[in-house]
Length: 527
Image 1 (cartoon, rainbow, N blue to C red):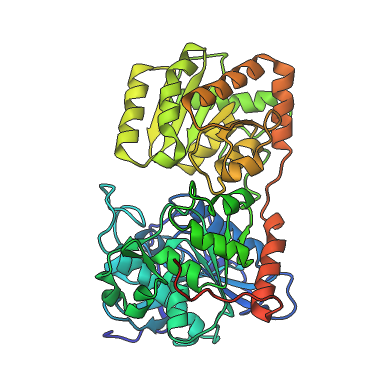
Image 2: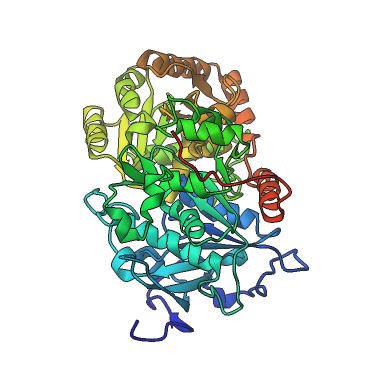
């Protein structure tokens, strides 16, 4: 690079605004210490492609924001992510602390540091040619995958490996992680880069969605500095391509996924996406666990500042105020019927085709439907057409707004989630907390977090008939006011908070960092 990166300060534009105070207005704990800690805790690096503080596409962004904060009282948790345009344009100053060397065609870049509230330190990769772009972290403005995503997320993985191996001093206090917690395919090569250079830093690899595996043609390997032996041995090879996700599974010490049911499902051909054999071996070896996600304390209808009207359990007038707000927002007619909602990425996985097919039945039965989300253009167009067919009964917003989403959870009576598979799902937890009863396919985390007939409705067979039968059950319950309110109360009483996930993660981290349990990486050909 043409200049020294260390100690450079990048600050946002003076006109940037946010409801969160900048870091200069609060005390920052000494390195390695957080509130409630008397001694420095083990340093752990959380490697992710999304953080809801800046940018999120799905649940990964929420998990990345909440789980490290839930663990701060126990570990020196820090996070590594790309410096997307949203990061650069945020109110938070970035202090450049190091330069990271490149590898093959992976460019060198700067490493910056941001200090967020609650004492969370975020390291960001300052590489404008890779990350400062319009669109989403993965797609351009036209919804097409960035053609260089392999290089972009190999850069993320390589940076994590460099920080863990000590190839670069990650901070001016000499901070170096004792464990890497890697997330989804975008971070899968981090464990591989470590092992290829002979480093045994323990790695936890969390699969949030097995359907997205980071598959690339073998020609990319030399561009990413991947040894041919890793492909020829079968360690990263996947049906003629190589897989970021398979690398994460092979080279990490332990694999977690985000619900107990999904951990079992992915060892079967129906949900394993071609990796079921490998994952079955991991499960048999005690290297695969399901640890459920949670939701943070901001999801509280009594205190949520986004809502049109805060409300408590049994304050149904307060909930109705949010319903009225949603009807006005989506230009729906005044109605005494139930309000159904979809808050989702608009992709095939989420079963939107089933929802679209059921929409006319919902309207004919006296219900209304609101949808918020974005995703695959054919689904977006089908929903727009649906809105045009049923003005005043169906409202659609292609896009996403945190405020609108929260108001929809608070204002709706039922949330539709006919997902083909759902590793964990957060929307059903948000909905239950706000008194909206989910109607969902019994799969993955949906099966683990919804009690059929008590806190929502589950259907077993993924079919239009089974889905519409569940919707009809919801209509019948809605007509029985006392029973409907009892289900609302039961749903709102559930607290899927992150502190419930802290204990299993602490146990796993301890095992890996102390060697109390035998967790060895699987580095052999998988047939």
